[in-house]
Length: 173
Image (tube, rainbow, N blue to C red; front, side, top):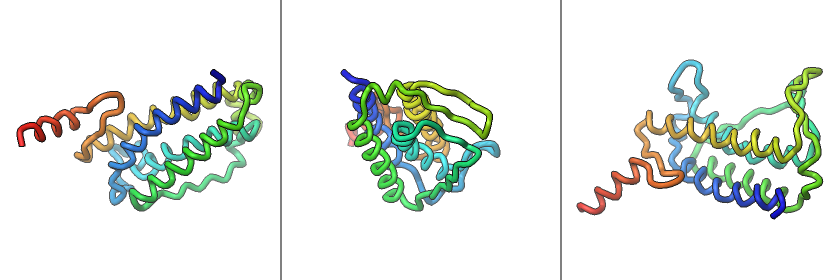
């Protein structure tokens, strides 16, 4: 199995879990955050949906300079917009992965802020860490946000306590 095939398989599996979480995001509470130092709910959900876009960027470029990047997030106002954003970045990432090679995946990619190089690693490592693992980290944060907002949290790798409670309620109805 090539690197792009392995990463694509993981991304597809995890995208289904991410989508389940995004379906529950109450976009009418986009400005809510659990703590003064925390990211707003809408920004966090949008960031998670943006992360597959890093796969495309990393494969198609050799570096990102945070000092000159011009990123202006657009926070989806509705669940439908959020899901459309998720689906679009996912599809583009999968298409990009499908058309790349192990040679490209082994090329170096650099993250910098002006003259300061933060890191330089093979593209496959950057995709694994800065896109996939990064997405899972923030997805965990989002599940806590949902819990604090009393939104039922879907299971990611098996049923959540909310799923179990729903199953018990359905069995006694």
